[in-house]
Amino acid sequence: MLELPEIATISRQLQSTVSDKTIGSVTVLSSPHKFAFLNRAADDYPRLLAGRKISATISRGNYAILTLDNTLSLVLGDMGGRLLYHPEGSPLPQKHQLLVEFEDRTSLTLTLQMWGAILLLDPDQLAAHSRISRMIPDPLDDDFTFEHFQRRIDSALLIESPSLKYFIISQFGLPGTGNGCTHDILFNARLHPKFPLANLTSELRHNLWQAARGTLKSMTEAGGRSTEHDLFDAPGKYVPILSNDKVGTPCPVCGTPIERITYLGGASFFCPKDQAMN
Image (tube, rainbow, N blue to C red):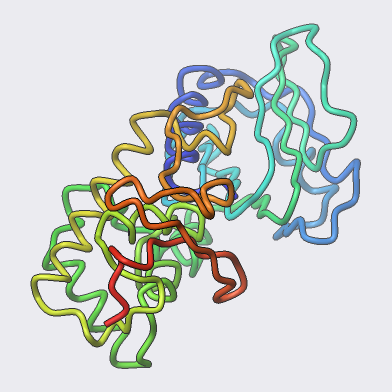
């Protein structure tokens, strides 16, 4: 899945690559996909997008937002797959769920491997979108202070008593962060995925906040994780500390073999010695 580091990277690349380009044509769902989520009929996208110019691109968590010159925004996010830029004359993927062809004959394609949103929103819809509105502030923004992080924890605890992994990937935790980034965040905080959120002391809360910000910053500055690709199909340069191929290998801190469990719908990797359960 493309998470905050990858979407931040792709959004910067979009800004420098397609900003000020005029859209010539748009094709949506030429390859049908059960988990491609649209907010309009597929035929509405070419009608509303053709002839429009991209004025700016920003990221919010794991959503890339391309603002058009008619106030509409093309929003792509919460997705697994490849969002790619194609120079004039370069081959396109055989299957794609979105093809944007510009007047200069360059193009963008989005090919989903899991699921993803392809939305066309006006300003009111963008402001009211429940998932996107929760992406503010971004965990790397100056406004994502320790005090703000504390309020997120306290809000989560009013509703339930979740684990750390659940908290991080939920609406309360770290906007734009999913299972993939969570492994290294928790490793750097020296906390187990199943550690109860309610058991965090003030010191552990601060450690988790610092680990989250530091880890996501490192991933973003490296252009994303090496397991994902950027707008030009290049893998990121951040090599995860914990991943499936690290299971059974020595922990880089203490040498204990890394373990894997299935938890909350996906794999979790951890060091059984360094990452405390309680």
